[in-house]
Length: 481
Image (tube, rainbow, N blue to C red; front, side):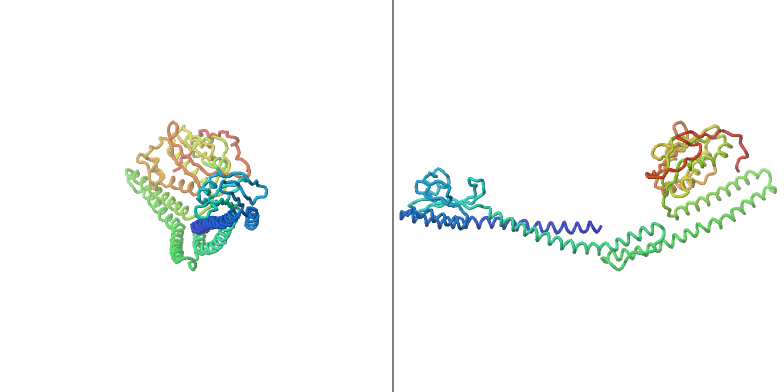
C-alpha cells in the first residue's frame, strides 16, 4: 500500500508539473521565436535604409563592407539588390553578384514596396528567419535587402529552457517523493501492524496488538476497535475450547450410566417391551456418537493447523488394511486402483479421518457382494466409489449440512460424518464433491493440492505402479453391535 500511495502522489505531482511546465515551455518557445523575428525585421529595416542611401549616392563599393560587417557580428546572411532585382552585394564571399533574384517571391514583393518576414529554409536545408525589405524613399524604390538569420541559436535557447524546466520538475518530483514516502509510511504503519496482528489472530493467538498510537485518527480508532474485538474473540475461543475439552468427559459418564440402567431393565421387562428397550439403547448410543461428533467438530474448528506434506498412497493403503476385517464381515470388497499420486498437502491426521469417515459411510450402505473402490486419478484426486443405492441430486446438495440425514435412510448415522470430512478437506486446502457412480452408488471425489517439490519416500507395500489391491470376501465373524 505504501508503494501505491507513493505512486499516486507522484502521478498527481507529475500531472500538476506537466500542466504548468509544458504550457510555460511552449509560451517561452513562441516568445523566443517572436523576439528573434522582431529583431531580424528591425535589423533588416535599418540595413535597408543604409543600403538605400548608399545606392542613392552611388556608393556601391561600400555595400559589401556594410553587409559583411553585419554578417560577421550577428551571423546573419545579407543580400542587397538594385531596383531590377540584380544582386549588388552578398555577405557570403562565395556567392556571386550580378545575378537576378527578381523572380523570387520575397524579392518581387519588396520591389513592389511590400516587406516580407517569414520562416523558411536556406540552400543548406537549415531553418532560418527571413526578412526582405524594400530600400525606398517614399514611393521611390532603389533596391531591396534580404536578411536571413539561422534558427539554431533560437532552438538552442529553447532547448536550454526545456532542459531547465525538466531539471526543475525532476527536483520537485524528488522532493515530492521524499515527502510522499514519509507520509505514506506514516499512514500505512497502523495498517502494517494491523495486518501482522490479523495474521497472529488467524494462527490462534494475538501476542502483539496493532499500534493504536500512530497514523491518522481513523486508523488509530480502527486499531483500537480491532484490539477489543480480537480480545473478545480470543476469550470466546478459549471458552469454547474449554467446553470442547471438558464436555466430552462430563457427557460420557451420564450417557454410559443411562445405557447401563436401560440394559439392566431387560430381565424385569415383559418380552413384548424388549423391542422398545433395544430402540432406546440404540438411541442412547446414537446420542453418544452425536456428542462425540459435535465435540470433534468443535475441536477441529478451534484448531489452527498448517497443512503438511502427506503421502496419499501410503495413507490409502494403511486405511484399507485397517478396514479390511469389517468389510469382509459384510461381504464387501475394497479395491485400490489408479497410478500412485505421491505427496499432497493435508493437515496432520486429516487424510486418515477423511478416508475413515467415507469408508464408514460406504460400508453402511453397501450390500453384500459389492465393491468399494478407492481410485487415484491424475491431479491428486481420490475417488471413493460404492455400489449402494446412491443419492439424489437434492440429497447430494444437502449431504454436508450438519445433522442432515436422507429421508429414506434406515441407518443410525448422526449426520456429522460428512460435515467433519468437508471441514478437514477445506482446512487442507482441497475440495470434496459428491457425484453419482457410473452404474449405481455414490462417488465421493476428494481433490487435494499436490506437493510440487517433494522428497522421494518409500512406497507402501503391495501398491506398486497402479496395481490393484483387492480385499476379497471372507468368512464373516461376529458382527459389530
